[in-house]
Every structure is written in C-alpha cells, then in structure tokens.
Image 1 (cartoon, rainbow over the protein chains, first blue to last red):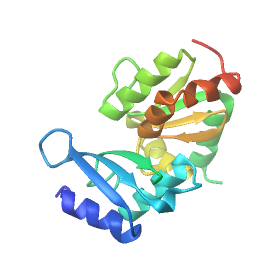
Image 2: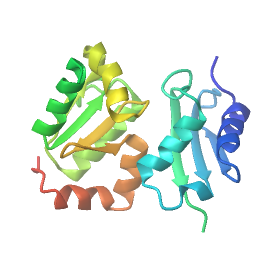
Image 3: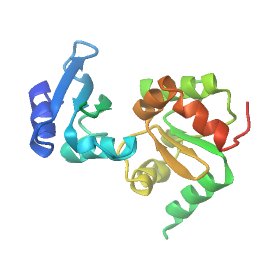
Length: 77
Length: 108
C-alpha cells in the first residue's frame, strides 16, 4: 500500500512540529509525490541533514513503500 | 569493516565523482537516476557510475554506508553529497558546479 498524502503530511509534522508540508501529486496516481517542507528545525543544517530529518520522520518507509517522493527543504524566513 | 563497506570505500576514494544509480548513464532505469545523470552531464565532469541493480550487495550496502535510504547517491572526492533532489537544488543554485570546480575534478 502506498502512503496517502495525509499519512505523509502527518508523519512529517509529528516529527517536526511547526513544519509546513506542501504535497504535489506528480502523476495523479497517489503514489508519486513531490513535497516541499518548510520547517524551523532545518535552520543551520546542511541539505543532507535536512533531508535526513524528513526521511527519519517517515520511519524507514522512504525507499520502500514510498518510492517516489521528491523532497525540497526550506528554512522559514 | 565489512567487505561491502570496503568495496564502497574503495570506489568513492579511487574515483573523484561517483554516482550510485539504477541502470547505466545510457539506460537509466529510474527517473531519479535519469535526472542525476542529466545534471552531471550538464556540469561536464567525468564520473564513474555504479549500477546497483547489477549488485545487490552494493544496493543494500550503500544505504547503510551513507545512512541514506534512496538511490541515486552522489559522491565527490569521497564525500557524500546527496541524492537527486539535493543535486537539483545545488545545480539550480550554481553550488554543484562551484563545488565540482573547487574540488578540481576532471572535466568530461
């Protein structure tokens, strides 16, 4: 079962309180997502570290049931 | 260090630029790998590619080695740079080209 938009958003905001998650359904199939995540926790971190926070929030599902998630990280101004 | 870690370590230290990918530069087997190749080609650098679909040990091992769950993965001068999203962000900001220039990697 692929993850729904709601599950993805909830997993990220649960791990990163205050994060804003924008999801785009790339293929219209509920399975290929692009996420833009704006989170205060990203401040001062490298891009790799920012993306790892999101992958950790998704609890090992990234690269598994969640194959296609493009991630863009943004530090709030 | 396990054998697979030693193999990966050897790959990323004996080549300036290494892309772990699904498929080959001519026939990428995944959209993310295809995008990573397009970015490297735009940067005009020489790179080594490793097709993880041909090597299950490296396919699993690289995820542990980098502590990163997805393929493709880019290494420059032995350092993990990121996956295709990070490559794209850096490329669009001009940071990837600058980093490749500064680290003195060979052009293609």
